[in-house]
Image (cartoon, rainbow, N blue to C red):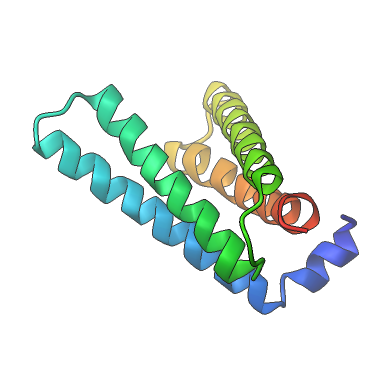
Length: 130
């Protein structure tokens, strides 16, 4: 996707839906981690279970609401999973680079999130749910 096509797509209803789902699932993840920790589960299990639940809800919301694709697709699910792994790697590497460079912690957290959100939207639209 070229920069001009990305700029044009940012004005589309899909864009708002994508970010609503993403923010909603990030909030859900946070609440689930808190609830599981409050229930006495360890941090690793709480994070993993919360991520799995949020991932599945995000996939189905993006497929059926954001991009309005009817019918399940194993190929789309595998692509979404692959995209999420790539986003995890990109966010982690960016966070590490910013941390080592001495960026403020808020920047080291927010900038990778923004980069991954734009990358995730572009890849979801052009590759995962096309």
